[in-house]
Length: 104
Image: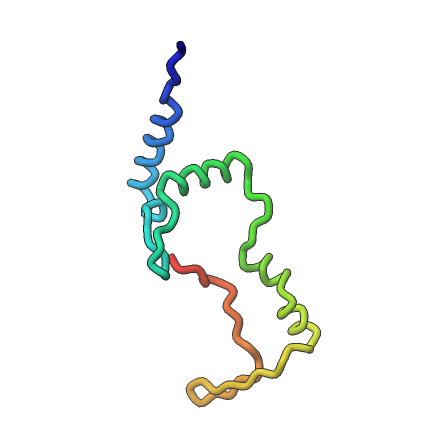
């Protein structure tokens, strides 16, 4: 009977250890609701898969905005009216977050 080698597992664990020591993004953390996120090994393997296979359809801020019907209506001048006051200034156009909206 042949024994199954654990070399690939050992390699992944070594890579995980080095990556976690280098970048705290890969450390297991709780999200805003207090739930545990992905493990460091899951994050490292996902990153390696992205490097090997690429990201098929990135949903970065620009792609999300281009797919949003809200912004289509806004461009066509058909968005609902917006009125609000901040520090004594009246605003009549919505404020839309499109950058740095994801927590670290």
